[in-house]
Amino acid sequence: MNSEKKRNHFLCEALSDLKDLQDIMMNFHSKYFGQLLVKIVGSDTIPFFLITNSGAHLRLMDTVKQFETEFFRIEAVDKERCRGTVSLLRAFDYEGNDTNSVADVVRLEKTSTEKSIELSGISAIQLLKPDMLKGKFIIEPKW
Image 1 (tube, rainbow, N blue to C red):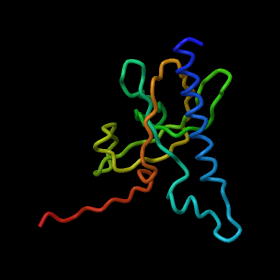
Image 2 (image 1 turned 180 degrees about the horizontal axis):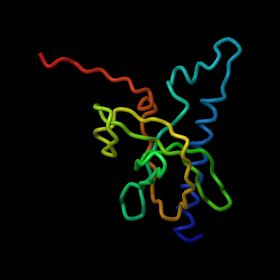
Image 3 (image 1 turned 90 degrees about the vertical axis):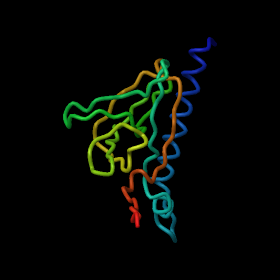
């Protein structure tokens, strides 16, 4: 197996594991505690961004809502063709404006826009904190 096929295989496996974890969080139901896992984590999504072979973050455009993002949620993985389907997460800064600067993001919002990604152009996956979807942040006074 050449190095590109190995890398694609590992990326496909990693995205598949991520999808499985999300499914566990979303579908786990206890007789006594209900959906405690989602309540503990605070979300049914594990957000991430993808790093391309050139070292840049992959950015995709939502042409309907007119925003660009580099933050995603995995929706499906085609292991045979090694493609992933992601939904776009819209990123907001403290003032509620769209942003793609990881340092400025205070909240991620799920959208219904899905895109299929060819994994041959991707070199890495970077997971983010699920609590970025909660939108809760505390501003402490300066004085």
